[in-house]
Length: 136
Image 1 (spheres, rainbow, N blue to C red):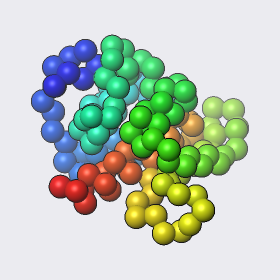
Image 2: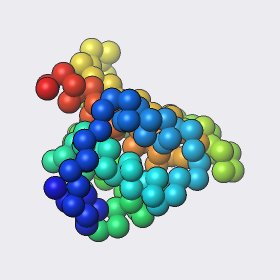
Image 3: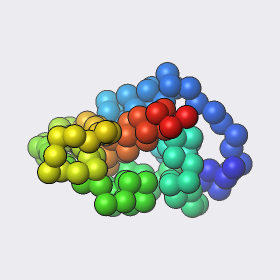
Image 4: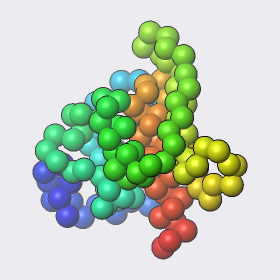
């Protein structure tokens, strides 16, 4: 399996995945190495849906790239972003829902972070974990 240009056979358990989500939600200055761990975790959860091109870890701090991952993993899902821009410490919340007109979604992904792209990635990971867990 190729992750960000490197061969990877990494398997992650729920505690490790929860740790990665916690890092996304609490840190406002993840390093490329930190984002590399996020790439590995997302690839573990959504192996067919995460673009694993070269230098992905260097681009994950981009909101555009985070949205592309959400779109590729969950096409046509509703993305709700709420927050307050506040210098380096924003307060962002992202919710991924299959349908925004009903409250009967089987799965909802949520994420919060001082960095918008990281809130989106946390929501994608949570949603992928919920769906993957129920389908395994």
